[in-house]
Image 1 (cartoon, rainbow, N blue to C red):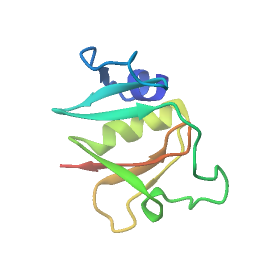
Image 2 (spheres, rainbow, N blue to C red; image 1 turned 90 degrees about the horizontal axis):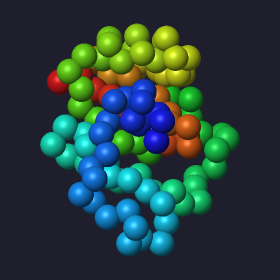
Image 3 (cartoon, rainbow, N blue to C red; image 1 turned 90 degrees about the vertical axis):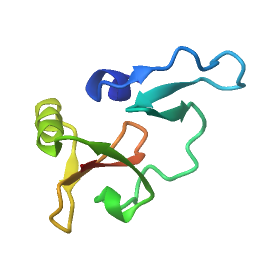
Image 4 (cartoon, rainbow, N blue to C red; image 1 turned 45 degrees about the horizontal axis):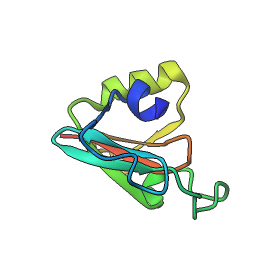
Length: 105
C-alpha cells in the first residue's frame, strides 16, 4: 500500500467493501478507474523474471508526465527501465515484483 498510496499517490476508494472478502486488499483510484490490490500468495516467481517489465506480464497506467515519475523513482531508489521503442513510457515493479508500465498520454 505504501508504494501505491504514498509513492504513486493513489487514493483508496472507501466505498468498496474490504471486510466481505476472505483476504486483505484495497481498491485504489487510478483516474476514473480502479485497481484492486489483493493480498494473496504470489503465483509468480520472485526471481528469474525479465529485468524490463515490458517483457513480462504487466499492467499499464496512463499518466500525464513520465519525467515527473522518473524523478520520483530516482529520488526514492525505485529501479525502472524506459520503453525500448523510445516512446515516453517507464516500467517498474512494485514491492511484490508485479510489473507496471506508466505511459505518457
